[in-house]
Image (cartoon, rainbow, N blue to C red):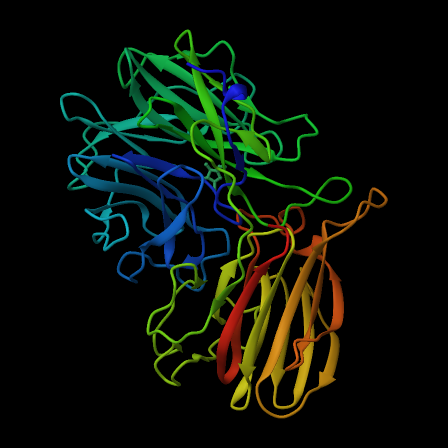
Length: 502
Ligand code: 6LW
């Protein structure tokens, strides 16, 4: 097989930017499908499609009905939906995932990965996160979970057929063997795992055996991928899945983060999905260079600059990129009430509340801007940059007043306020990476302000982005930018998202 370094074209990594962790991938013919974790957001499990592994389009969310996804208000942020596995077997798609803190492991099927997906099949006999599905030649279905242990299951009923068995604990001394995926490749069964924890020590290791349940022999070169202890611009690399292209080449999708600023570095977009080439040498995978501009084969692959996206809310449904907190009841969030507008009716009285009515999209670029035209005549609401209930900044309008608010841990403060003319007001946020400074320089700056009808943006406040980073807030998610109502009824005419760093 060719040397990846000599392959033509480049990929701009991450291939799916923004909070899209724990990627799992499968291919059917020329089509690739990929899913990610979604935690406390509804709908859950975003589903992407690609023909070249580089350009991905979101085609739906697998769990888009309350009967499939229960995220109660007392479920904390960063609980909920963890680490799906997506496979195609016997003419249909299979998705297995954990709802941490509620239903545990659940299995869904679909003939079209864009949906609809089935009602959940629960797996009470399968304990552990990061479930994987693999079928052997005689049709036996093996479910392997973090730890790493395995049990045979009946995927139609969800019944465990036997007791779980420990398979492999990963590299001695490495914490958290997790994210197992089991594959039949050539003469071996390969068990791919993540280890070292999902922080800076993260890595990918592999073992192989002659049967799906082992015994497994670890790869002498483990970890086959890690950026731990390096100055690489992409860190926390791990939680991977493998796929073979129609031309026989092999690829790995994985999560990684892009810490920025001084020390210790702050990442603000959550864990993103990256692509790396894989070669097989002596029956073991060798993972190629993972860089922001990575060489890849065959395809002319550098995606162009990402255009600004406007949502006009002129159609009945919302694009699958829009996510809400824990649920999205139509009586509180609708495009039907005022034609051409998104109408939100308040429940929770601020973005601090787990039941705040919020509709947002992931921040996907280190530098970007968002704007929305808000009519606050009947209520109070605005535009928020959210990491979780305890870490968010927002600009909100009520009557003729606009206020910028910041919540960081236990502290909540009003940062700025201004009077605006009566009627709808365009609220905006601009996010700009910080130029290098001293070791304490934060990752970025977040400016909130209002936009005049002629497009002039007047900043009211400039906030340090580090407080909306995973290193400060903790957890597994990333920033989401969106609209909310905190009192009464608030209408939004449009929402613009503009990448400023391509
Ligand atoms: C996931 C685990 C992990 O279940 O983080 O990075 C957890 N890997 O495998 C949450 O995404």
